[in-house]
Length: 161
Image 1 (cartoon, rainbow, N blue to C red):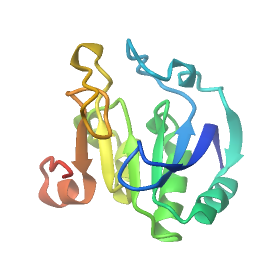
Image 2 (cartoon, one colour; image 1 turned 60 degrees about the vertical axis):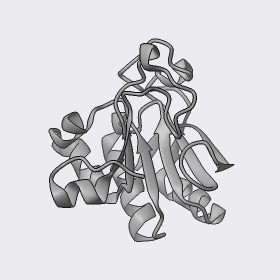
Image 3 (tube, one colour; image 1 turned 90 degrees about the vertical axis):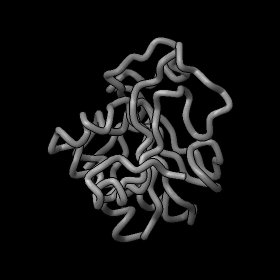
């Protein structure tokens, strides 16, 4: 299985706590005004990479994983495979950034399945009028850091702290 990838950034500290490996996935249907990464919108951008190759590169970094982009959930089947293997085979903590809201993710079977492998979901589109550069790990006040395991267990949104 392949994923369209813009780049893999090793040792980044801006996409979640600690030093992480961030996979920037190509394609984003949201096209948020003021997006800091509009070149990521093209679903045919970047390079096709096999999940095996990505997993090998991620494993060699020995760091937690962040899926970002673009919007990783725009490639749900390949991202499901990558997240499942990164969690089950490597035991990694996984963060995922998406322009979808939690109710949108929970309401779509193809997206909801991925959440079983995600530790923190940064949800909601970037809203330029809500931009706040003082926030940790997100760009606008409407975006939430959702503790996915606790949210799934409780049936209500629990924010990560």
